[in-house]
Image 1: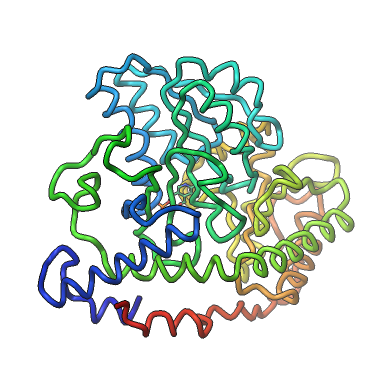
Image 2: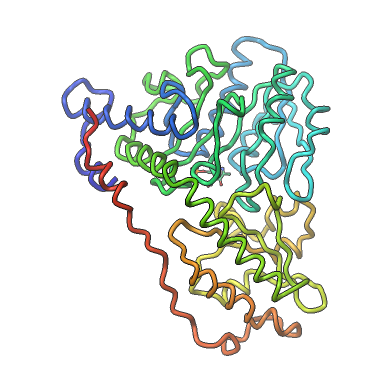
Length: 403
Ligand code: PLP
């Protein structure tokens, strides 16, 4: 991306040489992103990220209804969706659509019987492929089969799954899928909406108006360097998918089983074990005696690790995570929950060091204390972060100019 940002000065829509060079990178990225999800390049619309893709899919389908006068005005989604799904849904509620939340089990999986009962006459089901906080994978194939039988369109927010677990739009038979580059080690501020069959003829209308870029659905000059980098990230993610998933999944399982073994009832692992993203671990911590502890205070005590208490989008808000509340946790349990994500570069020694730091955290040992004792945790551990250098293949790919 660094090289492309310097060299791709042309506008990909311009016919001159610099523009044509930028366009070649954009089109190659379109092929790479499409290949990563088993789609056709002409079905990919580049956007500024999954937030925009989710808004475009949901508001765009609703806008198309208004245009062609179809009577269906019911929208279905899950309460554990990302705010970039929930907020456009809420907006459509204010515009006269009926929004219904399909319940989920405690592990975050949709209640299929409830979904089946809710589908009749619905216009659109927006159901995430994987949850960003608890990692739960939804039974998408089954959900889209039920929806297709009733003529309901299916959109999936697939931003968390790309590069982490297999995802094929063909096999899943969905209609729209949102993607985000930075979830698979690409740059922030770029993503895509996949549309079955491409823009023309699809039941979706633009929500922004301007030039005719991206099939007339998403106006605005293409961010060619970011898109080019997204393509490479998607390709590398696919090449590494199997090895990354099994290596990281094994480290995550090791982390969780060590915590469970050594802290017993003081930890609870959340999400659907067996149906989870391999790098995701959501853990609720309890004091002796059973009360959930303040996970924020636990993280403060572990400054050498970058660990989230909830979704980054919620960071700084005093509200407990809506995802954790939605899967049945009390407010106190939600505040006692940590979201641990294992990155591609993480090594076993780092995971073991993190485990030791958790197990030894004063908050977990001294139930009487309200806040961590900085001396009790021992000397801060010097963490050697994972090697985040781009592997050879990534830099090589960027050095090849597409023809
Ligand atoms: N959907 C999910 C499930 C996410 O985790 C995120 C994360 O940020 C988004 C959507 C928004 O993606 P972006 O940051 O590309 O707008």
